[in-house]
Image 1 (spheres, helix red, strand yellow):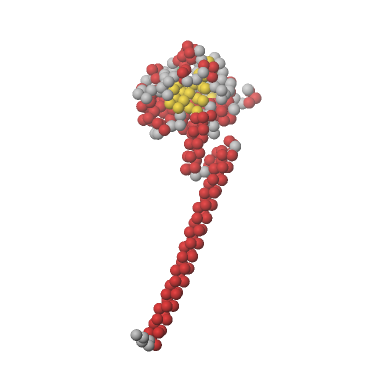
Image 2 (cartoon, helix red, strand yellow; image 1 turned 90 degrees about the horizontal axis):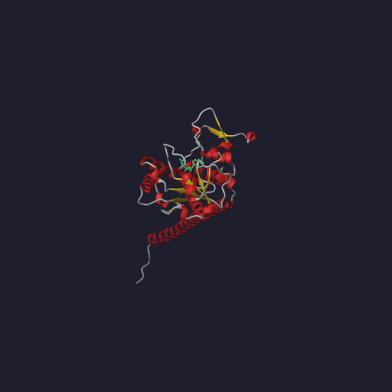
Length: 285
Ligand SMILES: C[S@@+](CC[C@H](N)C(=O)[O-])C[C@H]1O[C@@H](n2cnc3c(N)ncnc32)[C@H](O)[C@@H]1O
């Protein structure tokens, strides 16, 4: 049945139709706006990703001299990832430095605690190093006190990128590739060579017992060497002038030498100021 609409009904239907059309147009417009916004966000995301990859690439290709500068520009997360990669790489091709942790019978409980702290410090130095070393902790027994101190004093110790073994260095390396560092040696260390593994005595001997490592290495037929402190450093007016360095300080000397090939710089980096040594002027060398 048809009914003729009144004028007001006609106007009502027309208004309703145009409102619906307007609504549709508005939806289309907001939909377009939403799509445009999403595209903009996706583009920005893509740009950020590309810039990040480019930055990483630049760092990988970068020379050691621009490392610090590039490190500064990296985000914390990227830097952490990079340090992880460098340390993993060091376990394959880094300079081998071994801490002989089989000397705990010569130390008091307090000294073992200090050695654990020094191990934590040298690990920290290694993470920051331009050329991280391949670190070995040998003769470290998991049931021993030193291991317990290491865990207690160093957060994340069990995940350190280093090699830990209860075996002695003597069973790990060839006799002619080992150089045991000892302050009592009569040989002077002249280089830090990739062909050699440098052994640092895991000792904190506050009473300064001489010759512990020298006699051990002699008995094992391993060559020894002392750091060239007298050769490249001179005394200032004040200081303890002790040439016996802590384990982490010797480690710092070795890795700095590895990065710079310069004994004055390396010794300057490892020897604390209170010892009273400064690099000899070049003319005096
Ligand atoms: C605190 S020292 C212990 C010294 C201890 N009296 C000894 O017989 O080795 C810890 C270790 O750092 C290394 N070291 C310290 N000063 C050194 C130096 N001037 N030259 C070579 N190695 C040194 C040695 O490997 C040493 O065993």
